[in-house]
Image (cartoon, rainbow, N blue to C red):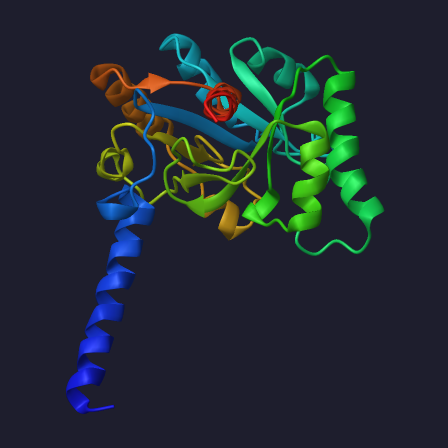
Length: 261
């Protein structure tokens, strides 16, 4: 291989990598996936932190909804919601599963462990009267076993893989953007792509528990910033949906696609 050929191949690989990167984050160029008829946003809240009651109050004020994912074994513990709190937020928010103990689903030992963390969590939530249909993988970690067990109980599941969702997205591998303390409204505006479904993930909304580890505190957003997001969504008219509503759209699209075959 001559030096000229080597440079040509290297440049081609770099351009391909850039194209794939831009497609993952923005849905650009020749790899663009089938788009939705409208632009959708979901507001996802992980873990069931007590501070997420601040988000509930603002969502209620703005007549918007969200999806909150409960670690069933942690409710009532220091820094987390009580079951009475979960009942209250369920008035306007979707309740979803997030395991019993926030287990890393990439590293459990046995199939019984997966069934316990995923299945027992589901049974606890449904036993308390919540109609849970979607799930979030703790830490965004998953493997084939985890996905298989999740499919027994849910119609969709969210990861922490970065990106937007289109009609071709696997409903059990939904992508999202986690919003942290260093983000701004510019980040919110930048990642929303017309004709796609964007999931924004939040943890603490307001001050986290004083004893929370630094990683948890880094995920906290201020109440003022969260309200700024809601104001912007209202002003732009982007449709805010629950994650289960997004999964139902994907399911409907697949059904219609199969009917045409």
